[in-house]
Length: 578
Image (cartoon, rainbow, N blue to C red; front, side):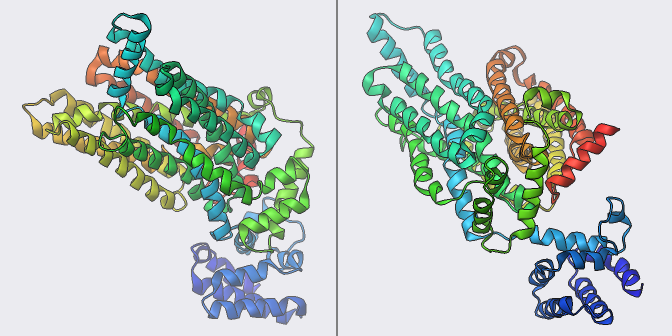
């Protein structure tokens, strides 16, 4: 009784990783083992105490977690063999047990895991980001080539409207391909696996690079359109497969940070495309085909590196029923053979999924337990694209001109904005596991809403005669990018994988990615006409949307930081019953 009372008072300190509190509790457990003559556990408890004295807190908790008498230790802590859900909150030492159980799942960042992240993310999300921004800098040069090419075919001068239409199709077809790729993500993920799907997807990159790289020599702008369509399909598939793979190989405590890597590589690749597209590098009359074809380089990197990485352990266990291979894969990622507790959870999930039918789109819509996370996933994906980030990027050059930056200086200012985007995405990678997903989304959308209002007001007063107002506009643009990169830019990509179990994840991911690309396409389609109609006041539309998304996130989006899939699923089951 003394142990339980004393431990209850130390629980709050324990959850805060207070070394002194944990050390005292382990000492109390050691004394409890001695008092009750639990000789098999006494040695482990004493070793754990020594570890704490040597400032090896994590190792100490691992020692307790990895003992063969785990069920017996659970009995000692909780005071009962099979505690109910309610007793977890009532038992005085239940939170100590929760920490010990989670510690075995929260493995650290290993070299093999880092290799798998690099192999899967660099070769996939690079295509998404690079091909989003690659046409920006050489736009005038490519447009001129299109006009000359069409004139040579017809023997007449091509109108500027026709050239603009063709170039707009080149830009938009990328999103159309992304919609198609996103829609078939679930099918590919189930049939070929997460790793297998990523590897096969590189065939599309090679075909696209051939089309893009030979378009000028072949005198065919249609090849650019075809290549952009193919690379769009590739990027749509990558947007679903890569975050899914990253989520399934990540420890619980690093799931958000590793999931952010996908968006980080997107921002880096956009910046690379802007740098390479400068006229002093590859944005020239002769080198722009090379600029477009460079997209094949990361694909080659992935083809060389990803085969050395195992398939997702959850896919091997749940979809293929290969328990031994799944355990080997998990041991490879974790850098240790002691993965029994995590394997037990994967097996338990696999067994539970055998009792339910395959999740279809209809099941996602009709089943209230699945419908709630589906609505959240689709809304957050739409929020990312409808936040107005593309509009800010579009206006950035004009805003920099208002501040007195023109020509090449404005281009370098745009590069600086891309650099800030990368930097803040790196910062969010560390913040997401400390502040949480929901907190960063609220900060991001709240900050963007305030900033959008200020930017709209400032742009209404900005002019060449008022350079000071233009400087304020530049500051608001940079703040906008910072707020977007803090959470809304990265979190939606991996949040979908966190909200669904193994059976529903592929189908839900397909829908979410398809919606994301569709929203991206619609923004690109509607923005220019709205900009012509409303001018700088077009940002007011995004302001209204940001406020609506902010309210939705506050009311509906749960916090998934450090929660297991079982805990998240139980949360949605409880909501569906209310």
